[in-house]
Length: 419
Ligand code: 3PG
Image (cartoon, rainbow, N blue to C red; front, side):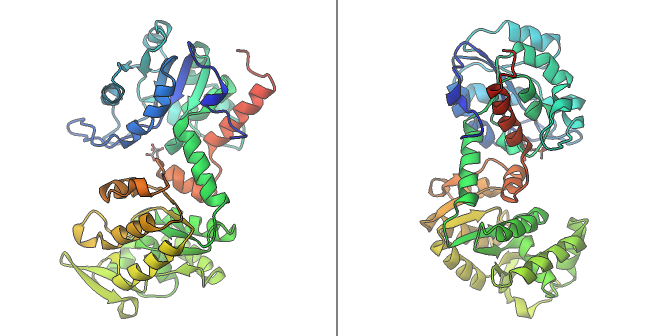
């Protein structure tokens, strides 16, 4: 990567390296049990690449106020098991206990510090104004930890849409680089949107419909994709914007889920008016009729029953577009994937992606889970570790962590670092 340093650019042997990862994982709040370790596994390659350093790891779990906002002790235990090496959890971030533990480290040691979001600065100093990371660099987190480190590695792609101190503040004080996950994500997602070969399609579904409408607009405006296939709640919003009456329950669902539903509807309308041929809406849907699947054509709506999947005609039509595409970008399930009766749309569209010879990228909240349940992960070219981060990247938003890593390279080349 031309603008960002990677692990290949420095000799990190015998150095003290601060590594920011994103191991934010599903946790049972009642038992504290870790319910999934996909994100922890994703960072193993980077951690192994740093096995001859003194490695200090920073991470967050959940957000203040949530029930799974817990210590990283259980993450350290799982990391130890996966690596077959001790990962010591220190229940402190930058005060004397953490500093003492870091100073006593030997080459090959790994420490995981406490949940960075236990410390109010991490979530309180988050303003991003383009390129200036001074407020983040002046936090206690950065001022206390940076002097103990030689280098900073950011591998937390899944949090790269945030400008929190542990993610962007260290670049002002330490030569910084991308870890393997960050490198792969930036390279593959950029490839999908910058060099998309035609025909290219975006399959937009999932729960974050507000983000998806922005993505549709950005992708069509910048010519990233030739066609947008809409599914799930995203499709329902587009159908409403087109004037289709979905029925009381389905309309209420959209208005209660999205505070700015009216704004979303007018954005969707604008997209439909600008690119009427390029935005494909379902022609039929599956309603939830007392737990059973009931297919109706869109022209038969409204219905009081909730729409929980796309219908069979739409599945066939969209699968055909996907199979013939040379680039496919998907960001979420097509319906209520968790309920067996309504998995069909998601399953068939993802299987079409796996069959397609085109370059396929999936990202967003539940997509990696869908790929592993369907056992198609090895047939998809890139499965992003990011939920919101992937969606922001695809939507063309500026990613603070990317900007910060670019700034670090510039600072290093200007000789701005003391070390
Ligand atoms: C995620 O789970 O998407 C990342 O860890 C970022 O978490 P956040 O949305 O709480 O910042």
